[in-house]
Image (cartoon, rainbow over all chains, first blue to last red; front, side, top):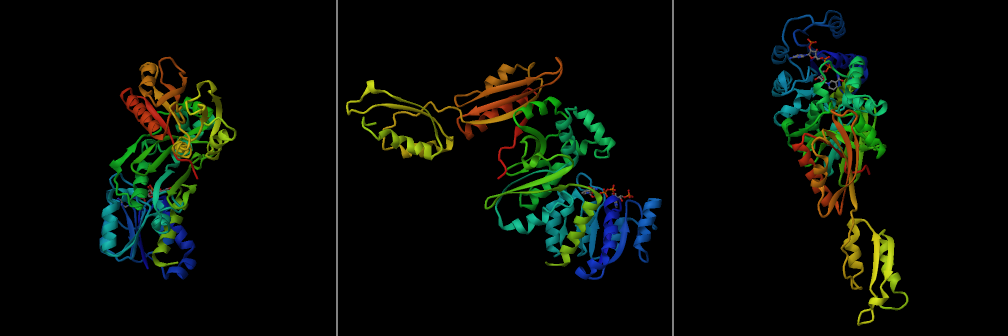
Length: 322
Length: 157
Ligand SMILES: NC(=O)c1ccc[n+]([C@@H]2O[C@H](COP(=O)([O-])OP(=O)(O)OC[C@H]3O[C@@H](n4cnc5c(N)ncnc54)[C@H](OP(=O)(O)O)[C@@H]3O)[C@@H](O)[C@H]2O)c1
């Protein structure tokens, strides 16, 4: 099969790395693999090229061999699967256009791009009409198995609610405030230094990232919803005293994303020892079912290899029905 | 109850079977009814969801009244903002109703002019009254620019 890679940053490069290092094993599972083209925001490589050489060039020169734009590659070249891992944009951005072009052409899509939250219904409906698959395990909790589990295994259950910690940066900040009694500003500075928080942290600390992922989860279990439907509060106003007082009653504070009747992202009191009281950059998703109680899925919620690993698994899942 | 042996146990059994806890029993011998029955006042604590079932189990006795139901459901919430300067007692009284009230308040105000943080415990007769009281609290806090942190209501099972 021919694979197109759009977005060649941390995740895109790790995906290609992993694909090449597991090539022999993967080809036994899903057949011969070829890379049709690779594109980033300004350059691309297609036709006759060595993928390893493309990785080397991107890492040393910051670009790929040719000037052809991603969109033109998508329109003009032949491929069976689009691996979309360009930058997530609020409102979807070009990534959604990339996916629409691919699906329209009859190609499957594997993506880590959370922009799908803004066009979920449109993308899914088109994929269904074109009889192709849109796989997005990597968009929520990186390698934590949750999307496919919800879409397949839990599809016969009645899900009452999903609640989770969907943003590792916020969870890191809150668990450090809990441990050290430090202020939000102090811990945020520390998180920036460690590369856990961005220079402009608002996408994480205002709950935007968690809200986008919540929309993806909600739509996955059939709650038709959009980003604007999420009631959202961030964490920047939480005082160190709040952790002290909460601890006296056996609670800590975590940013919880919850989907049931409503979609809500806000800080909540969580009892120590509860599966949502985990510390560090971890992500956790709880699935509350009518039939069998509550299930917890936890793990590292981000990271380029974690994300790439989820995408490789999605790729194989398209072609291999085990 | 009829004034003869073995009567009390018939009342106590269903209470304990439903997980109730007897707090006190008073036989009012001086108030015997014309049918020679003795009024017995029992104080107990029991899950509010079980009250109805208990009343049905006890219907062989004439249960005169069972008001006095105390506050059984509670929730802890955190408030952050200018809690004191926005009339704390007004905030707290507005939560109170006939079936819910604020039963505990811990306030921490590190700087006089700064934001304060409080943990508030609301107790109510039942889940529904508790939910309503929390909604009232959230409404008041919205008007006073106070942020509220609610607990996760469902425990992990
Ligand atoms: N990293 C994680 O842990 C993680 C986890 C889950 C999901 N994700 C998602 O995965 C995606 C990639 O993340 P990342 O960490 O790899 O980001 P990154 O390192 O910033 O890479 C983004 C890549 O997208 C390319 N790009 C941006 N706009 C483009 C456009 N319009 N057309 C084509 N390419 C474009 C960039 O091109 P240039 O190289 O030319 O700048 C870059 O190669 C994001 O959507 C992110 O939200 C990441």
